[in-house]
Length: 113
Length: 178
Image 1: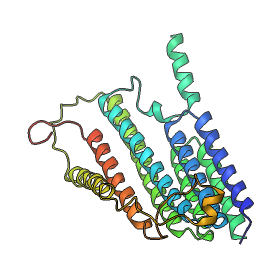
Image 2: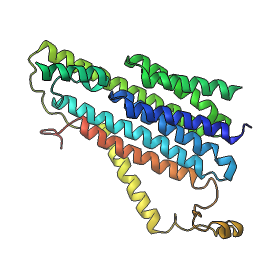
Image 3: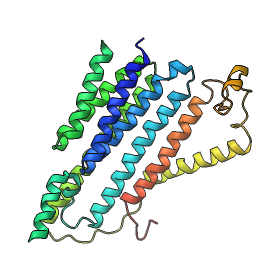
Image 4: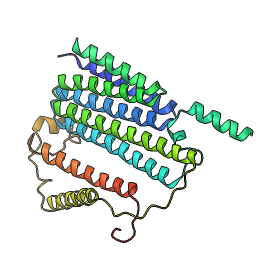
């Protein structure tokens, strides 16, 4: 079996990717995917330390974390669907899903004109 | 070797999913990342966690693809400026009542189990463990006995959340619904 540090580095890299995506992107889809990556990294780390401590609670915690991540995405999707149906986005619902660059450019053009 | 290959694939897919502009490519890369992340989990002996990760990833992909489809369809409708007649109110779907009932049943189950002290009673902590870190002891009983009940309760809680989501997606109704 590989040493725990391998899984530790893998989890840290995965978490860093997710954190960077959640912090730097404004696209709703990208942010939700990034949050999922962070949840996945936490699950990997919990499972990696189960053999070290010899306790199976880590796997149960990993199961719950993955479940919580799925629930979080489900709630976010429901909120977006509700907002789209109620006509909350003033310009276009697709603007919620596009990246910040296009959104910022569109807003700048709207403010300029 | 399998770990390094899967880790490389997972990190590469995750990086592309985070940075990709096109949604379909981002979702495809995320799917690859999820499948690759299951390999280290299986190597760690956490097959159930790997299976749940894959299932949850599939659910997330379906949800996000559905949201994108709905948003683009709504945008097309807005752009064509078609006259939209007010849709008649609909009753909540039967799946809502099944999920909501499961969630309420889970709540009642947990309350009854806690009230009758079936959950809180557990054997004494091991001696050495109690001396080293007393605060970390979590009395959960023998291994395996609590795994499936806790997972079932978590899944029923998920049913309750999904019912709440359905109540948001299918808004209020007129006659025949609440």
